[in-house]
Amino acid sequence: MTDAVQNLVAALAAGQVEVVDLTQPLSEETPILRLPEPFANTPRFRLRELSHYDERGPAWYWNALEGGEHTGTHFDAPIHWVTGQDQDDVSQVPPGRLVGPAVVIDHADRAAADPDHLLRVEDVEAFEADHGPLPEGGWLLYRTGWDARAQDEAAFLNADDTGPHTPGIDVACARWLADERPILGIGVETVGTDAGAAHSFDPPFPCHSFLLGAGKYGLTQLANVDRLPPTGALLIAAPLKIVGGSGSPTRVLALVPR
Image (cartoon, rainbow, N blue to C red; front, side):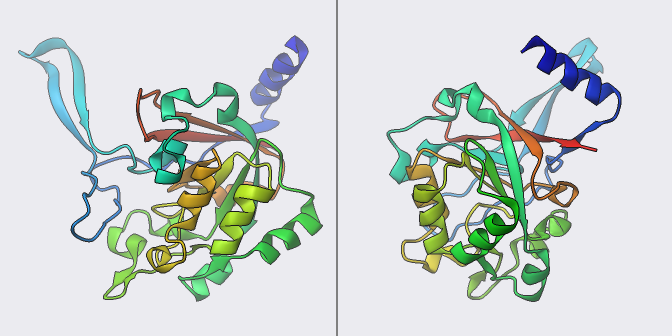
C-alpha cells in the first residue's frame, strides 16, 4: 500500500496525473435554488468581515460565513430528504465514501437542444455497453454543459411562468440508479440533482427521493466536468463535517491520468 501512495505522489509530481477542480467559485453572486411560497428558501452565501489588519485585529484578516448548506457546489447527505431522514447526516458519511472512481455521461449536446432533457435508463445502459458497468463505490457524473451558465443566475435557473427548465434524470432512471447500480451517488452541473421540472414528476424530485432514500449522495453545481474522460477519473468530495448537517458546500476534485 505504501508503494501505491508513493506511485501516486510520483505521478502527480511528474504531471502524469492532473488534479481537476470540479468546484464552482462560492460568492455572493453564486446562484441559489428558488422555492415558491410557502416554502423556506436558502439564504445567499456571504462573508461578514471580522477584521482586516485594523483595530479589530491588527495582524489578521478573517470573516464570518453566512449562507445555506445547499449553496454552490455542494454535497447532499441522505438526511437531506424525508426518505433518508433516519440515515447519515453529512458528518456521519464514512470518509472512505468521499473518495471513489467517477464516470461521465455527456449529454451537453442534447441539453443544448432541449433544456428539459432527461437522462433515461437506456442512455445509461448504452454507456455501459461502451464503457463497462457503472463503478461500485463510485460516482455517475452527468454532464449537460450547464456549468457554462453558472455565472448568470437567470440563465442558470432558466425559469419562466411554468417554473425552471434545466436538464436532469427521469423518474425510472433515478429509481434504477438507486436500486440497481452500486454507485455512491450522482453529480450534476445544475442547481440541484433533479431536473427543473421535477416538482411535477411522480414522485416529485425523484433523484432526491430515491437516491438519498437508498443512502446514496448528490453533488451539485459541478464545474469542468468536460475535462474528465468517460472513465478513469478518481473523485474526491470534501464537505464540511457539520454535525446534524443535511449537506455542505464542498470542494470536489478529480484525479485524471494524462
